Image 1 (cartoon, rainbow, N blue to C red):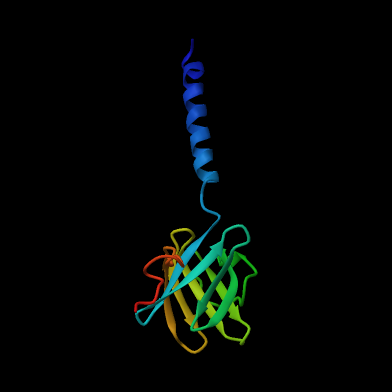
Image 2 (cartoon, one colour):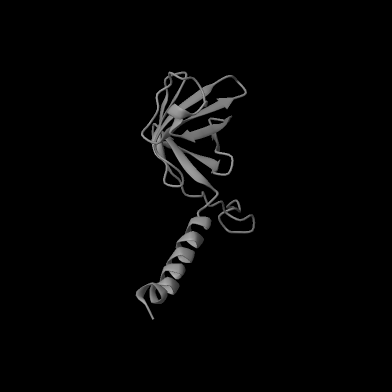
Length: 141
């Protein structure tokens, strides 16, 4: 038996394992917007490149793009990070503009609001909320 025939099952196994890993990559997740010691949990969906975050009661929604210099996302003169950029809009006409240094799920970058407020964008962890029946959720007497 030649080397190719003997190595083909192994190569096929490696290919299937890599393909399974790629397909198992998260399609949704969380990120953290951090500013002035406060963390705001954001959620993203890789399928439609959407991201949303609530900051001080205002909901911002938008999209991100990798290699945004080649995309039609937002203004052409907006700063772009090493990986891409994002624009998030609130119904109150407020805007967050983000420069992404790395993509999701290990996102990192910087965002700035129209008011000049700066945010660090980092990978997030889901916030655990106490269950309604737990001792932490019951008022103390």
